[in-house]
Image 1 (cartoon, rainbow, N blue to C red):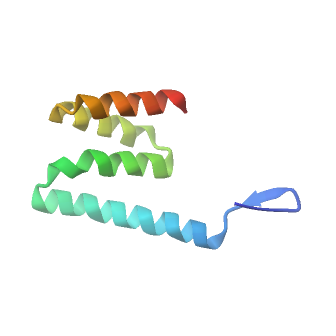
Image 2: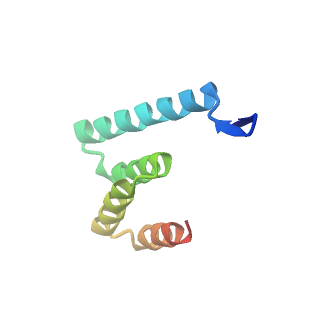
Image 3: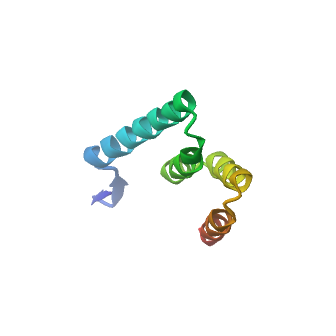
Length: 84
């Protein structure tokens, strides 16, 4: 963020990086669907949640981690979300 004259605004390069990251993560979800590599989906959804502050993505990640039996990931993410 750049602070100029008392206001905050995103730098274009930061916005571009966020946009490109979102595109890449959505492409990764497409690849998961195409290849059946479901083990990657929860972490991709978690990263989308962090990028967009999207609770629905975090809930989806938690459900997928739980379905996979990844209780450590469930506990970690719940703790991280509780701290924000």
